[in-house]
Image (cartoon, rainbow, N blue to C red; front, side, top):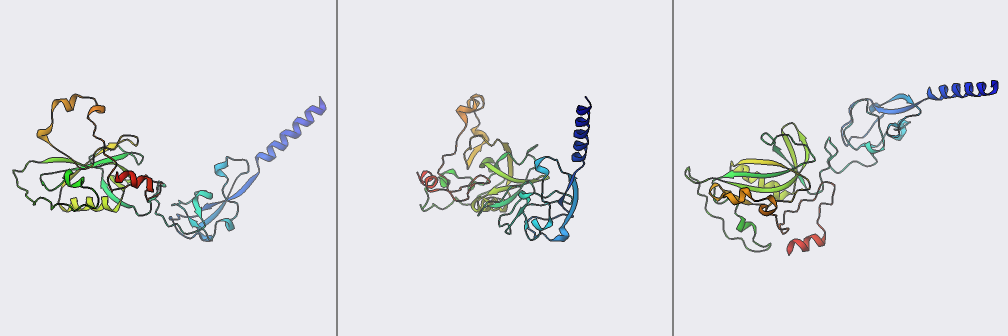
Length: 270
């Protein structure tokens, strides 16, 4: 019994001593913006328990961090780890939520004022309202690549011209949300299309859409007189109009290569 008590007491003392062990780790002494070269003045050292969860391991020496670059925005007192630094200056813009703007893509700010609750893992269907017959012409949009486009209809906009709604794009990815502004992940062609419509002073609208939902028709125009009861009462599986995958506006998902493969290109041409 005496030997057992001694062993238990020694184990308890050893366990207490081990639980009090600490290790120095590196934290950010101040805010470090994405892409900045890290200097000794950016860093501080704190003591943390030696036995701690793996995500709190971090770096134990400033020499492991100084001279490298911030892979994302860091706040003062953030514990630095390997995912937060990079050996080379980042060449891809990164947003505070960690999303990256892919090569050859552009971010376009878009108002979410009338969209309602939404987060950056959702998609947007974007459209506009107009009375200009030259806009949202699906026949022109479907002309095969390389063909000579017919001239657009003349601009004839009068107060008596009937208005219509046009679904312009479907399933647009969101890079980042800042208040009521979403930064959309678009191709340059998609971006300049939005700008051109803004120049026509059209009224934009958008709707929240799921990541796994089917992409709806681009350039789908509807006049109020086209609304019929069967369309409103049939199940969505019978009325949804899917975009045929033949559009040149190729938008890769965030994190995917920005250039379509030869297989994708051939499928699109078909």
